[in-house]
Length: 197
Image (tube, rainbow, N blue to C red; front, top):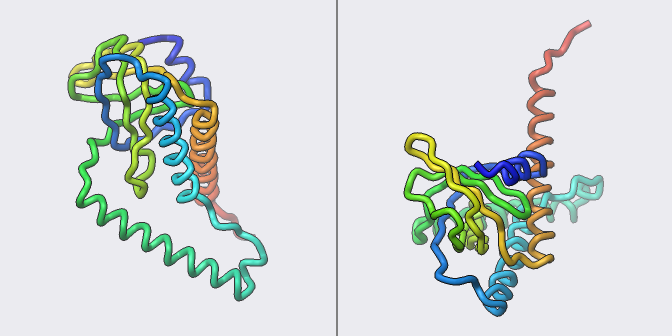
């Protein structure tokens, strides 16, 4: 295991989950035009996911008739999005889910099929949102591959991300970290026994 990458993933804010993920080996590095198009597409993907994950404001003005109408409209749109998502899921082939963790510059994932070779340049596709059916595609360089019985752990470094995509990815990771912290806090609060006087 690459100690530097392991430390990097351990010590920086990272996102860990299991989602559909696939890769294909590249014969040669992407040229500037291809990377520009890839970055523009990733900007759209991360921007769309940010909109889907946007939390409704919890303000007093939501108690007004206009605020309540907006809440009802948002609820209907969420249901419509879910229905369209399920319809698309039946018609689109998504890759198998893989356990992974990533930060803004590297990723580590576990697979049980033949992994890419060390030092391979690959195009990695990650479906970062269960509703949004367009993957985040990134060129990566495989730094290390280790085997543990029938599974492999692959570590790779992102290559060619623009500053805009890098910033959007950092915001995506931070949103999920913050959500995880809030979930943990609410779980701990619910488990604390109350005392009666």
